Image (cartoon, rainbow, N blue to C red; front, side, top):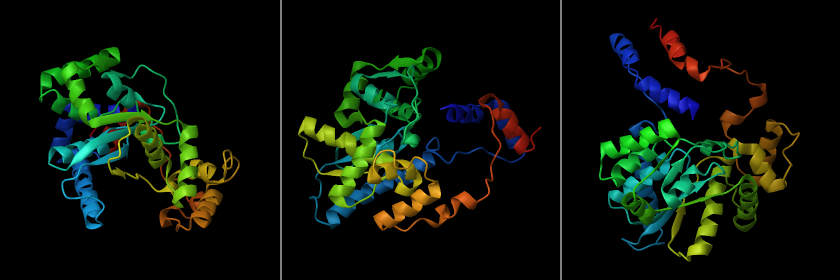
Length: 303
């Protein structure tokens, strides 16, 4: 949250922009702050639907659900844009970890970051300020910049905001929210492996966990696509606990766990992860959030 807030502040700094322009430079972002990140994500929802048609799993025009583990709301927002462009979508199921600010918001329209922050085994969703939600709010409020600006001001100044009833109704027509804690995530990794002989990462496991409870509660039998978001090797400790038992990873090196996961799953270890414990750490500098502007200015030689 601090890093992303700092990046946004840099993007909005007029003096920095002027210095960059004089040097022929322009800041950009590789994450979903950048709209360019969402474009290929929109495409793969259409691609997934086309795959279902090609495999004769659905009829043309049949609506499907998508389950998306997300913290910054970019991936699931891309699904919403795909739906707006005509993709037949019934429900978008937003899966969170214990930092469940999004699932709470979908339930009652109250976005409240004034809560404890948890470090979880699905760390890409360890977020309390979900940047892309602002883009959805713009659409839900009939593209009212003034309304969204008010909500964002409330968030910045008071730590929370409440959307109006019409926007909440529009939100809940499409979105369903839910969350899974670390134990539920690890348990789901094991259950999926036992049932399907398939190893998932922690974020994908959160999605399956949330969907299982949603389906049982709602009775929704719509065909559903799960967005698997990462390699299981990226989160070796938690995945090992899922496959081999809680606490298994404790005391074992990352290299050992990666080797054991590869052997158990039959999956080839990605080359980028081989020999990690023997590689030199390239980036050792730590920067305080208050020093971002000074460091960027220094690195780009803008002083």
